[in-house]
Length: 423
Image 1 (cartoon, rainbow, N blue to C red):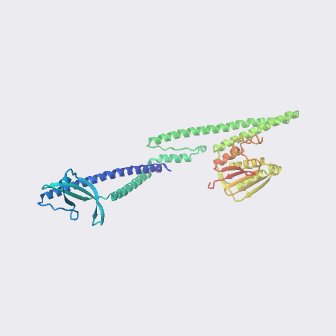
Image 2 (image 1 turned 30 degrees about the vertical axis):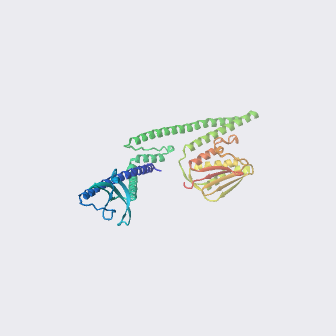
Image 3 (image 1 turned 90 degrees about the vertical axis):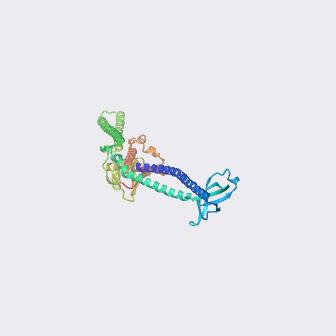
C-alpha cells in the first residue's frame, strides 16, 4: 500500500471516531437547546393564557385540546398547594398526520376569585427519530465529503510534496552497483528530504567504494595466486621428465601437482563465484536451452563413452531464456558434469526440457540434504577432481536470474531448474 493511501486510511478511521463522538455530543446539545426553547415558549404561552383568563368575568373550563392549545380544569385548594410547574413529553393525535405525534406539555396552577385552576399548555416538538435520521445522513455526507477532500488533497497537493521521495525510490530501484550507475539526487525545499538524500548519497558512495575495493582485491588475489601456481606446476612437470628420478619421488611429485592443479581450479571457481554474486555479468541475450544442452552433451561425449553412460534427452518443448550465455553454459555444464561424475559405470542419465523447466536425473542409493548440497565445499571430500563449488556456482547463477533450482530424491537424484514464466 502506498504511503499516501496508508495515511488516508488512518485519517478515515480517525475522522470516523471523531465525527461519531462529535455527532453524539452535538445531538444531545441540540436536543437540550430545543427543549429549552420549547419550555420557554410554553412558559410564555402559560402566562398569556393565565393573564387572559384573569381578565375575563367568568372562567370557562376546557377538558381537552380540541378547540385550542390549552386545557383548563378546576382543582381543590389542597391539590393546588405545593404544586410546581412540570414539563413532560407526551403523545397527541394529530388530524393532519392521522397519527400520534410527540408534543411538549406544561402543567401549571393559578388562583382566581378564591378558586384554583390547573392549566395545561402544549406545543409541537421535533420527533427524535426524525432528528436522529437527519443528523445521521448529515454526518454521513460530511464524512464522505471529508474523505474525498483528503483523497484529493493527497493525490493533487501532497503528492507533489512527496515527489522527491518517490523519485528517490525510482532511482534506487534502477541503481545497479555493478554497472557503475549514478543517482541524481534532487534538491528539495523540505529539510527532511534533503537529509535523506544526503544520508543515502553517503551510503551509496560507501557501498560503491567497498564494492570496487572487494572486486579489485578478488581479481588481484586470483591473478597473483594463479601465476605462481602455474609456474610451480610447470616446474614440477619438468622435474618429472628427468631420467634419474626415483619412482617414489615421482609419485610424490605427481601428488603435489594434483594438489596444485586442484588449488588452481578452486581459485578459478572461487573467483567465478564471487563475480557471479557481484553481478559482474550484465550482458544478457535469449539463449536456446535445448540447443545449449546438445552442445554440452557433445563436449562430454568421450567421457560418457568412457564410463559407458547412456543419455536420454526428452525435449517436450522449446525452452528459451534471457540470460548471460556464458553463465547459462556454466549452469548446465555443472549439473550435467555432477550427474556424470556421481554416476556408476554403465549408468544412465535422463534430461527433460519443457517450456519453463529443465530437469536431469541419475541413479543413486542415498538421498542428500538439499541445504548441504548447494553449500560450498560439500564435494571436496568425495572427489579429488572437484573444487567443491560446482553446485554452489549453479545456485548463485540461478539466484541472479530468479531461476528456482531444487533437488529431490526418488530412487534417483533429481535436479530441477524452474525458469520464471516472464523473463
